[in-house]
Image 1: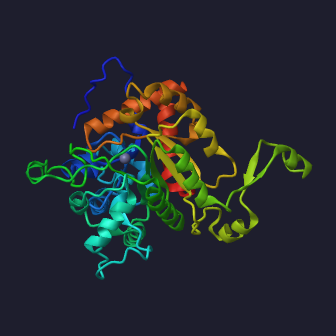
Image 2 (image 1 turned 90 degrees about the horizontal axis):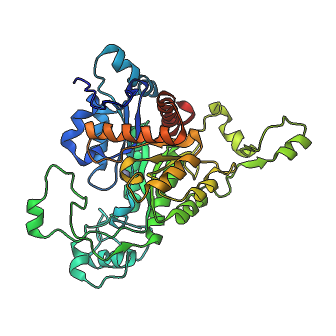
Image 3 (image 1 turned 90 degrees about the vertical axis):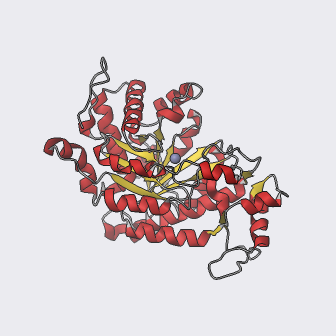
Length: 414
Ligand SMILES: [Zn+2]
């Protein structure tokens, strides 16, 4: 494929350095997956969200997944210098999105007993589950019965743990909390015949929205279980948060409670005769003891994830600070997409936020539902915007965003 210079007056874009999409959904349009190796982006972080796409992300990883961190690093320059397309270009990510959180039930709840070994709930238990987790409470039994049979949370976690073992570079995501969404109404028979079969099922696809939201309490439970899994497996997490920035921070805080790093102030260090730098944080001795044998990189299971990306971050700039407290043992990144963050209503806030995010915690993403030229276009657009806002030269910016993505995805191993 020839690179056309449609950008005209713009400076040419340094794709050869390597642009990595921190969050996207190409498995929503399966037919376009084959275009991924031809894209200009060097790597994509491919999110799973619901029952219908976990296996699609795994299958995409079988064909297109990076086999090593080294390969992920080298892809950008290798394919340019060799002129050959390199098939491997994605990192898979397995998780359950808040928009589908009602489709999981808490099987540790003794009130929700399953009727068989597959843990399918009886119609009464299914109704009770949906009445518990949907708000306002619904008495519309036709609607409740039309919803999918919910899956046991423990079963989903076991399957995800297996996938994370099978794909050692995989992340956890997309997970999160969303206070603004409402679940769609059921498909009418006539609609389901006319639906676009090129799209992966389970999405909204223009269906009308019901009045029902998923309770924040239930969303917290599903999120927290997945954060613990990420901690257990020591994988990074991609998080969706809409109108829930306080709650999201609370849930994260609960996962690292009791594991905060000890913060030693400048004056304390001086008193102890240690070198004088800024504020510094140390992991407590007991934790160091456990991790020492890995030479710094911890693979020891923890209740909190090692790294988190708040994707398409839409909170206010003032809320950023809490995430940078030196005692927080999770490294928090923020990624931005031109679709969500640069809509006319959100652009001003996003600019202030991007300016305030430390340079080494910024990521770029497309959040797009199909691979191909459009995805490249969004990544280029957002990268240029970030560089403008930060006052970076384009090449320096692309390099910085690449290094940040490597650290987010692979941690110290990068
Ligand atoms: Zn997403």
